[in-house]
Amino acid sequence: MSRDQPISPRFTMALVLSIVCLTSAACADSQPAMDTSRNNRVKDEATAKEVRKAAEEGDASAQYRLGLLYEGGVGVPQNYKKAKEWFEKAAKQGY
Image (cartoon, rainbow, N blue to C red; front, side):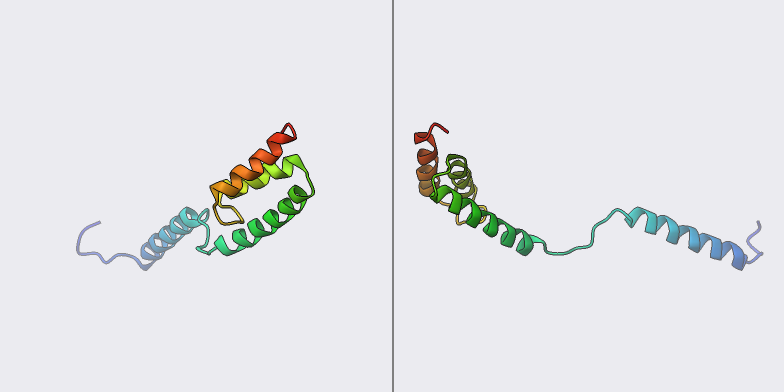
């Protein structure tokens, strides 16, 4: 192809379509940007509420789990003192 010949419209169209296809294939696995932190927080708070109910009823496993939630600040404010208290309650029951 010499420099004097114009680029064929078919070639240009094929090139553009190829670039579009490659770009869309590369982006196919990307996730849309959305804030899921609120959804997770609501779920975590609901889980903490259920676990607290069982823990207060004396379930050693739930007491230990509630301690973990307090330790990590998941669904409840992070509080190492409360975490320790719940771990001790579970330990007293042999958990």
